[in-house]
Length: 392
Image (cartoon, rainbow, N blue to C red; front, side, top):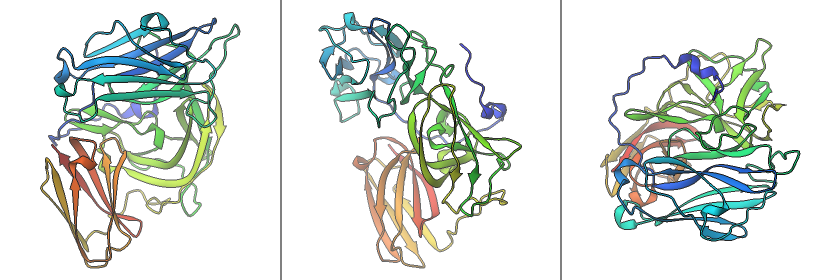
């Protein structure tokens, strides 16, 4: 099916070379909700995606898969081990009848793992869809003229095995990979820096996008920034941002160059706002940055003031724990270390104390497991140091 043409696709032909041999983030084997639809007689049909990474393709890695709603739970029959497969199921594929409420419900997929065959401490992987409630990401779904749904609920997935969030789709694609056709809405308005100067351009090779549109594609051997859609500016000064139809809020505007690593991105704080959009809908929303790290008229980012602060991490890579050795010409009071995973999710915050030298220990158990992480040292609300952690 046709997919929407994104602004950022104009520069997909850039010849970008990555030479950092970082380990790949390992995802759990799991089944998750790919798409849900109700027919005119209010019977549910679900597309489930089963993802088992190649290093877990051994018989018995998944013990069982259970589906749960507000009405009860039932075991899914008939699945089989595969690296990647879409399955279409309904109530007849379960060992017991299971009712889904088309108006509002909480649907959960529970994948029970054989712990002896995985490297993870958890024995169950959970994926959940909540719809029909006022504050959830899918508060309502379009109704068909004869009952049921005119829309489906789809999972956004940029990399196989990694569902990000749910959105509404006017053109259901049950049985094939989800696309964005019939799912796009637009937010438009004026975009201001913290001095209330109007931002009307994407400087040099840098692009802005909403927090929800910030995604990372695996380009061997690293995960690199590949946003779903970037902000586009009109000649009259208005910005347009295409988003997938859902309810969400935004507290950051992301700025970066196409295919850059996570640690080269800017996370620009703004006055938070939210929207709840149906496919094809356009709303007006002005953006006001509160962050001082982007100012109209400055084409490139200023170098952060890091001469008076030194950070050493040892060991790195590490297996069990590592230590941050931090030394500054000034007190570290009010400073903090933030640890992010490769997708930009905040994993750990560590407050610093009123010293000029400090040693901070970080345990592997405080992270999400093996993989590449990014640390940021922040003092006086300014980013002064950033780098990578490699947890083996």
